[in-house]
Amino acid sequence: MADRRLAGFPRKGPVTLTLEGDPVRAYEGEPVAVALFASGVNVLSRSIKYHRPRTFFCLDGHCAACLMRIDGVPNLRSCRVLVRDGMTCQRQNALPSASFDILAAADWLFPHGMDHHTLLAKQPLLRPVLHKVVRELGGLGHLPDAPPAELPPATRRHVELLVVGGGPAGLACATAAARRGRAVLLIDENDTPGGSLLAEPPDGPERARELAAAARKAGVELLTQATAIAYFPEDAGGLLAVQAPQGLLELRADRTVYATGTYDQNILCPDNDRPGVLAARAVGRLLVRWGVRPATRVAVVGGFSYGARLARALEAAGIAALQAPAVTRVHGHRWVEAIELAGGQREECDLVAAAAPPLPASEIARQHGVRVCDHTRAFAIDVGGDGATSRPGIFACGDVTSAADPDPGRAAAAGAALGERI
Picture 1: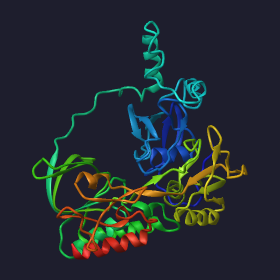
Picture 2 (picture 1 turned 180 degrees about the horizontal axis):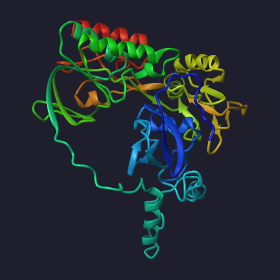
Picture 3 (picture 1 turned 60 degrees about the vertical axis):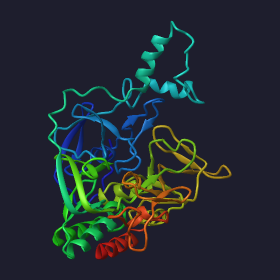
Picture 4 (picture 1 turned 120 degrees about the vertical axis):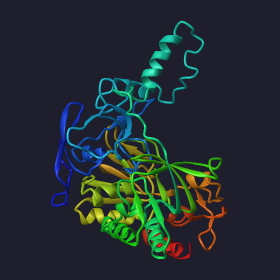
């Protein structure tokens, strides 16, 4: 398999993992999905119903397109699992393999869709057979090799100021508040803080490290790989449940700031789910955070302003970049081969960077009861000029408060301003 890593990019020590028995070279700190893609693996799984080939889309833990079986545990997001020497990986939902899956015949047999709820429902003799077929077609992995380890007890904490989200807005807010004497806990679901900066060319990852270092110096407690999963208003006056490496955290805070940023969205056209159609910021993460050459010729599609910045970075790295406002179809099966523009014009490419405007990640704040604004395509947290939401003691800043085109600099400025007031 061809190695897609850029020469001269700083990396940690090499390790070896295995993919279905075959050794794959990787480097410490890389997620499994990045290590496999960098080593030339294009298909990470198959879709659960039609068995269409899948790779990651967002590379940020939100799309569930990169679920794999890792060390005997099914349905792990391979973009979030960091490699270690000797790790074993398997692709799911395929027979006999993800590279050649005979169950993909379902995609060919039912080109207009399959309603498995009514298929052969009136044939009682065939129904048990159909149930077995549907289970095989629609299964999502197999049970783990071993029962899970005993779960650690939940830990309950009370904090003065909780910041949810470690992107530019959250880091800047936490730092400013800590400098004013606040005791601040910042949680972020990624392995390192930075948020959108980790995809921002040319030096976003370095800026992220600087913001994180400034936060730690100011006294902020940074907790990574910690995902806010639910808010429970009925428990102890309100608890935020956080899944963290050390177990479940039940957090109460005098004040909470939501700086959860945005989700990447796909472009709208047939076959936009094919491997090789990636979020533009996923392409940026490959390039500037992981030092991986995404492709040879990239079509950057959509009106999100980040797309223009990505195209310039790709060109600077010697990668051809074609910019298009929209496409009518993506061509290719196991990987992108071309895009079709309005009027039938066909442009060859080997990757599509979907630069569709991202959506505010407002779900957890909405569980907390804050009011949101309906911007037709997005629900952004409604805040006043002081960053306060409709709930006392709950604040928000950054891209989650707007349906406008996200900008890391603007988000950081808004976060810093809120941290000075809160």
